[in-house]
Length: 191
Image 1: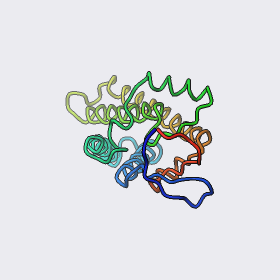
Image 2: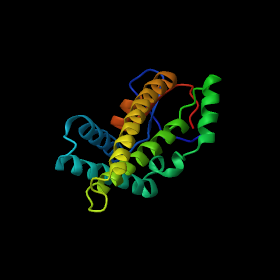
Image 3: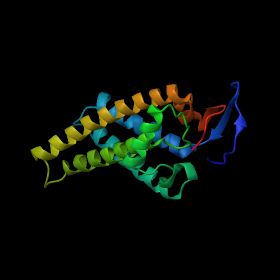
């Protein structure tokens, strides 16, 4: 059980807890925008594609730094990557547990690290393609494309997970990622 600062929300029998600070939210939505732009709108061979990729890398780097020095819910210790915790979380969910996690739940934590690693790998392979050594090297281009495909699958799973967790826990996670506050239904255990 976690001690939390709370305020009553406009919804009957819910309490709001400040979770995600403005920088976390700005990085989240900006990274989503970079993925959308480079995946669906901007031409792959363009300079804009390259610069948007560098922006995505910079956003992940900034988020990693913020995970070291930011507020408690933004820090690594608030959502450690642990497959064992993720399996325990799944087992508890199948058992009917609807505990609300103030930061990411253990499955969400794994997805966050996966998305960050994927963006870094895409950025590294993208940069490699601009160098003399790796320009035109087929395996680098293929790796870039395969990792981007993996990122798209990951984003789809992330969105599905957010929708499921919102339904399961009763906490609107999209709203929380916009306003920074989770509205926790009365009687829910908080972790």
